[in-house]
Length: 112
Image (cartoon, rainbow, N blue to C red; front, top):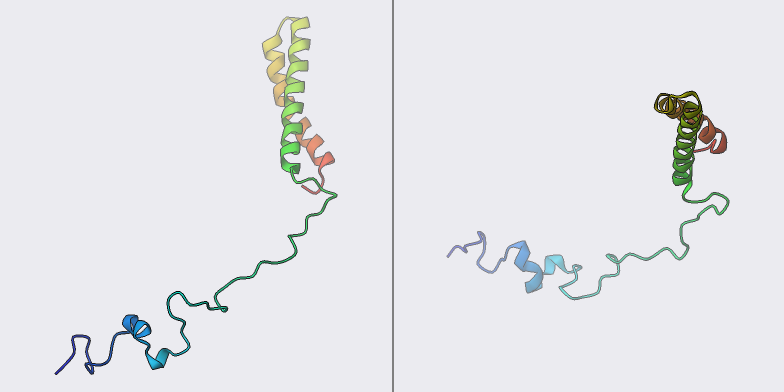
């Protein structure tokens, strides 16, 4: 008589073979058994961090850029208020603050 799984009636498919204790899979641990080859060990040393460089350098560089932009826009608006065109010179100061901020950040953070 032929089995539903094909082959000899005593032969089980692989998914059932481990549960039935198939001798061909003798080295395979059963469910719930400890297998040291599958466990991971933690590295005892944490990843090295260079203490001389702060970790939030990008945020500091961005704040320098934004601060320079706003400072130039404020100076332009102040000069514009004296002349009578605060909005126009404020916008000129805003656009002038972009390259000024980039130059400031590049000089301050050369390796960023």
